[in-house]
Amino acid sequence: MRKRKVLSEKRKILLKVEHRAYNKRMRAKYLHSNQLTFDDYVDYVDGYYKVSIQTQSVKRYSIPKVRETEEIPSLSTFRESATGVEEKLEISKQYTVVPAYNKGPYMVVPVEELHTAGKKV
Image 1 (tube, rainbow, N blue to C red):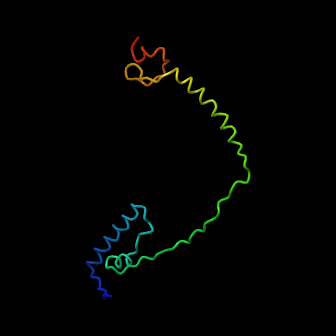
Image 2 (cartoon, one colour; image 1 turned 90 degrees about the horizontal axis):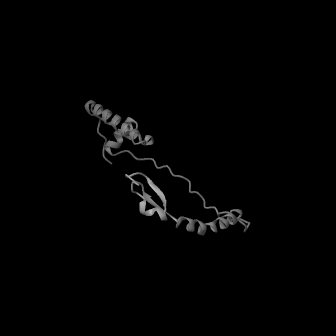
């Protein structure tokens, strides 16, 4: 390992300005935990700084819980509502969506009146 150099006053002033700018950049990036003290910053610039690694405990895997009952109350209402889909499709075949006259919003028009849709009548 190299021998550390003694900081001159000029270099110390320059490093203080750089240290403030470094900490300001870290705060601007919302990395408040990465801010350094002046001594740590000097070590960081000279290549002596070692980052302390914080380890997190490993979360243990837990077996998922399985539902005990086979009956699902909401499933019966879903099946009943699915029977109305064919009825909705038959009704929607009687209408179409077209742009209104003069670049207005879209409008729902019966198929019988499709020939006049979008025109000023």
